[in-house]
Length: 255
Image (cartoon, rainbow, N blue to C red):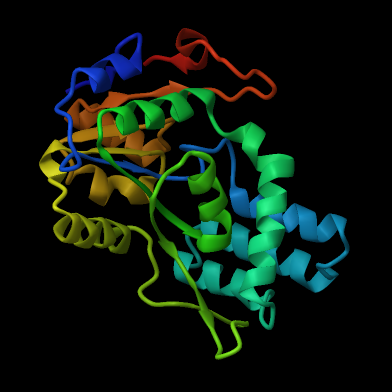
């Protein structure tokens, strides 16, 4: 089969879809709702404010390279990053990342994805931010888009609310991410067979195969190949900063 382009107006299908909260609309974060990586904005801010030492900078770069080469599991990459924040108060990090969102992430939210989220909300669908990011990076985006449900990774905390340097288990990634969506759906009476999932990552294939309306967004190679194999509609979007009322046709490209 061949991957199919979405319609000229990707919200037209949503407007004609079955309404109600039993229909889920799950959205990945980095590369799907946001152009780039929210964690990178946080790391850049720490470097700019000289809060990150040379050891942290080199450690993050080295770990990222090993992960991209398949020599480090995502769980270990996330734990490495959490280790550099050990001892920080979560409430302080929440405030920092809200500032970073306003200063540098909000303009990188894909305009067309913001419109698509709103279209699902207008149909009364249960909209969920489903991401492997941690709370401090995911929740500001969820608030901005008025998404009530967030499935993401959490820092392990001590009794004072400070980071221990670990990530709460199970780590949300790959099949664990799919399992979290299944548990959420069971608890909230969401029917995955009528639901949508928007994501770009190869690791999102497990959940993509579970929903009735898989929607790869700017998919990476393995996910693009699966879309081609199964005939999943592929959405191509580009970012733009500074335009408040984008045209859907301007920001959506098609395969």
